[in-house]
Image 1 (cartoon, helix red, strand yellow):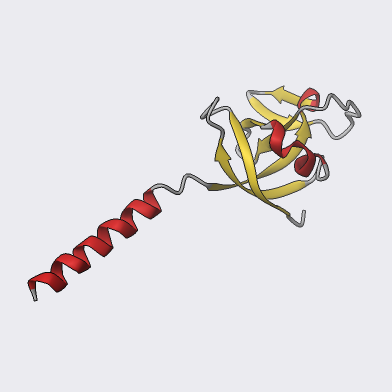
Image 2: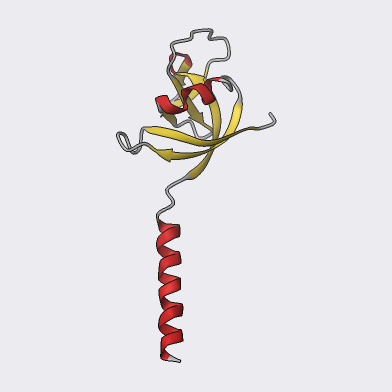
Length: 110
């Protein structure tokens, strides 16, 4: 009986460690060329009239937060430039709070 309890406790601890290691989170927002991000009244938005193609892109979150998209995810993101999307992201190692790497990207209906 003791062995079964210790085994169950070990499995539970392992499961908690696996879930704690998952740093991916879901976000919604608009994929935007970094040069087209406009700040007004302290909130960032993507200028729909902007036609600049700087090669650098950002995700302007629904909350007005701007996150730079890592270069490894640029090609996938730029296909959805100007569109409202839902993404599953992981912060990059270099800039934990300012840059993201996209794991999954889905278009959302307006």
